[in-house]
Image (cartoon, rainbow, N blue to C red; front, top):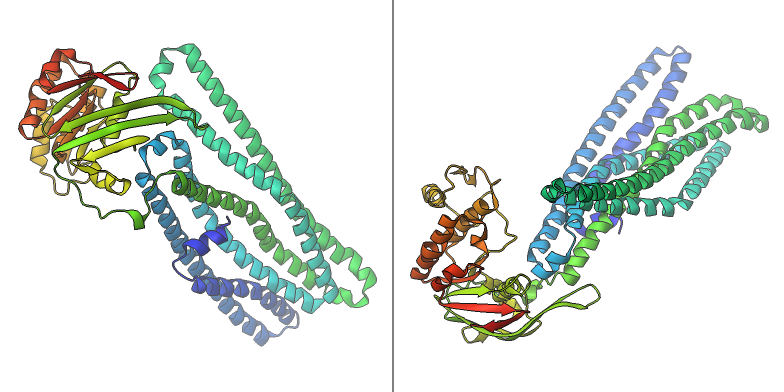
Length: 542
């Protein structure tokens, strides 16, 4: 996939106006060479009227160049940023629509790198590409001017440029390979840095682990440096090569052609001036090739991510989606002979859950107990519709849930899992009663830590137990029929733990809510209507 294909696929405007103004700017810039040349000739003849005429033409061409270039670059920026926003938004939308199991297995660093780094590079390269297109027009104009001065010089210049481009393209595949390698290494470097940032506490108390992780990071940094240096040297070689090419071309025009062409001496100064004039445009065109190659890699990475989301993300096509109508009540949720398998990349089963038969009545408090790794969290994800069963069926009242109905079914739940996330704002609530939120903050004994001001929490950098209480506030405000908690009380002090079980859960039950909670607190089992014990992926007792 190339950046031109990117524009063709995503464009919402033809871009003809940008092309016209870029051409106008390029031709105006090229015409400056002819105007300067003729003006210099007029001055040498002491023609004051002629030089004034060329001054007027020079000003007109310069203004045309400035206006055309500004218009082209300004509107190209607007267009390219619009395209990037479109793709970035579309891919992000597909990420949020993908299934949890897929999302849990994808490397998060790939998402960050593609949506942030690759889109930024496409944005930065756009103006360089537009400039190079204008430079190409200047080059064409100058070549016509050289042809007008001397056909032999024209053929030599064109032949030299073609030979230089062919030699450059011979190394292009290797350069592209290096650019892809840089992208992969930077992603790997980001992953390693994430281990240092997210595992800071663990590394702080284990010097050997810390040194090992840092050594691994340093090794990746070293290999990233090597491949970047290799790519940089390739670019430098290209730059020096282009410089050398022009000096050789000038040497041919100045030293060799006068030997074979008697009349050549009359135009030699004009030819040298023309060649010097095209050095900048050619360097711009040649210099943009690695930028274009890197932009092509970035475009390819974006579409690879989108292709992965389309292929493996489990996104339900728009045509197959049922009309979204949030389900607001139920009598019973039942799972019938449900199994679920965690698999590795080779489809080898790593963990098997089930078969499980279970029903949850509206208004019940149900506790799930069992050791770590017994399948409690997996069962919660199946019950809440975040996972699809490998076999068996999930029933809502008397109806089997099909995949198109799952999005509506999930609206029954308010969830707090062990790996929960705290949002800085109460997204999705519409108008929020600030006083009610702050009253809940006080109820959760968080009023000395945070407040709800101007539509957001003033502080979310709290302890794990405090963050869980903040998550409880958002859950209570959602007012969903079913509350699902995964070890929410595990990090609380004894007083709040007792308050959570004896008052908060019972208050939810009084309001007709259903509570499904994974817990180890056997001291509070009496609060539940039923306690389900799990072992080895199965419900062993009730």
